[in-house]
Length: 337
Image (cartoon, rainbow, N blue to C red; front, side, top):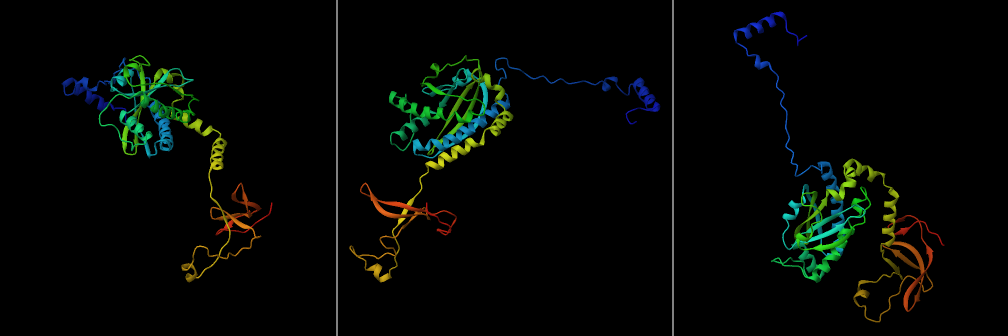
């Protein structure tokens, strides 16, 4: 065996030790123990897995903001999750400026609140957009007026309502806005030494860029901390009934508007006749008065109908539903109902 010394090798080692050529301390194994510092003022309540799951939740939230806010602000909105970190509440509150824009949100049925902080330049830009302006922020910060806060309250309500869907895989929440604070001293929702998770989101509204910080206290999330991991999050997402998505899609399709047009008829004119057309001239069509009209849905013929009127408006009465696959706008199968 390679690890076993022969008698000659043992004798040689003993001779070298006795003559001082080798030092016995060189053969003493020393195990180095790695010591990791632990800050008792910042207990590690949020793991990297917790923070990553929160980022996934708010990436979903960001997509909802990007698709819903343009309807109110009439501007393209881009949202990107920047990072997440665990700090004490005092570190978060001490970094806030004055004035600040804070929404204190009740996360029922979870115990406690969270805080949504929106950069003041975004707040001024949102107010300007909602009041008919181009959406430019103020050059110099100032206090928000009561009217401005009431306008922003509606935007905060929209932001908070959109929180429901991203949290569905973790817990069914029914969040609502408790109040808006512009002074950080009045937003002490927990002890300064308590740990919180902060998710930072970058928002761009028509070129005006600013940050939104979501402050999530450990005390608020304590009951669902075991669910804040990617394995649980993805497993519950896969277990959700796919028919619910089908219902949503079906509802959206049913509300979609489609163009419907009635074709009275067609005619062919020479270029000379077309050039000489005057008001009062009559163009003969290829249909008789008693003939049915073609009803187009988009560029496809889907119905036959007779012309008429309804409440002093032109109207058509459907006489035939054309079914089947169409080719180049022409239906190959038809049937009367």
